[in-house]
Image (tube, rainbow, N blue to C red; front, side, top):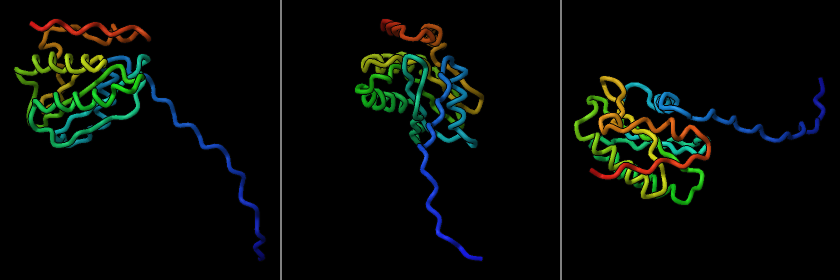
Length: 165
């Protein structure tokens, strides 16, 4: 058998990356976060930005965030980085507390997170606390309504953050 040289196969254009489905609800966001949180749970903070259409791109994971208050500087750092990104209009963030749960101070932390995001031109959609007893939304502790319904309309401006009490 003889082996004759053959020209290389023609190069085709690389396939486009699949476009992720928009994140339009807290349930959608939680699914995304849980995909990035394999068992066993570890103390970490996860976050991603969305555009006005609910499209995101990258999940940021900050490991070893054992202090519950760490969510604030993590959010501020991410929001500062997003200031120059016109498509980063909304933020979803999660605190993973493997041995814990939602804390009494988390209602106030929600208000602080919302304020920090707003100061940088970002709308905080949700903050999840994922713990041994399940998933909680400190927004509910703060008595605030679901922000997903407002943001589900493309191009709609985010509601202003609540006034400090």
